[in-house]
Image 1 (cartoon, helix red, strand yellow):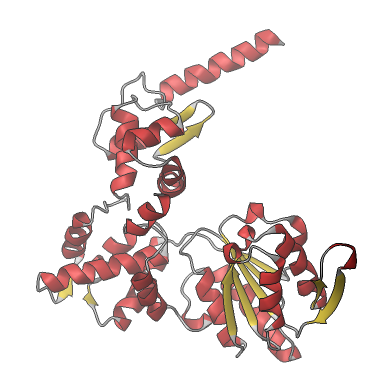
Image 2 (spheres, helix red, strand yellow):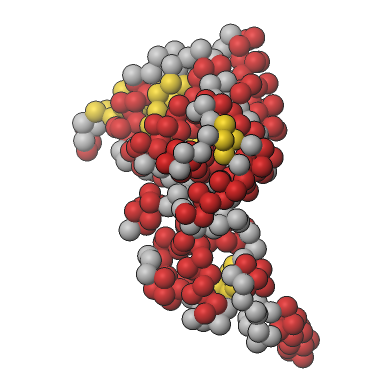
Length: 361
């Protein structure tokens, strides 16, 4: 059910097969066309340029950050900039050391190996990767038990590009073997407008500056979502016979798809509405909140919560989830003084905790 919810949500960073094909067509092909992430782009450009000057394969690269910010795109750009072939796999697909050995043994010199969600790779494969990254060698174990023999296999120099949405789950020994680590940040509205302008040009769409700003403001700081919303606005305009999309048209299209002015979708608003109307603003446990909106706990925690917390609409406390004053205001509701997120009550509770601590000491 979580995957289903992610796939059907227009503001999810995950994508279906058709959506991914369209996204691939809009991907920039080189660093010069890549919008945003100026710091990572500048540092990565230096790493690749130095490798070309030395005529050696580039150092291994680790890219971390939330979904939809361009990790896969950067891996493809690295391959293009180094004029090298690209091999794509993912952590969940490598569950045995033999799976990784098969991939590594078929690499050619200078090839780029991209492993998405690298933190989900199995431990045996991970340990094999240590030696492959550092010494370009793996030991293939033949046989079982006392008669098993390890046969060393030399690998051609290659560049590993790892991508992860949860860098904290990567073990230190693996993280330390990457020569360059780049963390991708959420995009500003202005950067997303640049992304949208490039995509609109490729899709041959006429959109006003206000129209770009309207779409960018609802894109949750994520280029993948921005491009997806752009295509939905394009469909709406096509059906309604609109040649040039302005802010009003973009807003009408996105309202129809239930994406509001802050980028919240149906699930986000249902979580906030249930938290406020059924539980008085909280605190309430995650599982109880998930049952109230008819979703799996994992869906609420991984799909809705991150953005609501980032927007300051939901708070996570030791006693459970609470709706902040901004959430009440966004839904057009008046926040009672007794609500858990009310500033006056929170300050009283803090005073009581400090008083209890002082008397206890």
